[in-house]
Length: 146
Ligand code: CA2
Image (tube, rainbow, N blue to C red; front, side, top):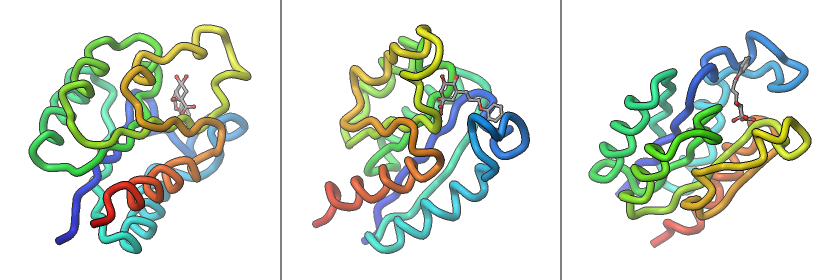
């Protein structure tokens, strides 16, 4: 049976490919969705890609994932560095969680160096552009293989 992966994206990531290409590249969230679906298909994984600018909405989707998803890929955007609520929600999710950052946050401002979400993440992919989402999907495919 196919398993579902939630690919969750935080604030401003709807602008991916439309602003600041020097940091975040030229590809869009639609490209991310297509690439994740392609990798997932090779492992029998379906993908539901979601984006919100609202912290509570992301918490609600993580709660939904408790029943609906076998694993989570999450780029919490700026909430990475601020949100205990997202960390708490992820702690209530039992499956594997992979954290993705498009940019190499450790080469950037000091406030981007700490991630609350990393205290829960089973793996973290940083600075690989949108390919990071595909790498996370590949790892989930391996971990969730029957
Ligand atoms: O590198 C990442 O993926 C980040 O999670 C992106 C966040 C940033 O706050 C984190 O420190 C690192 C920002 C997402 C904003 O995305 C945009 C994309 C295109 C244009 C403008 C913003």
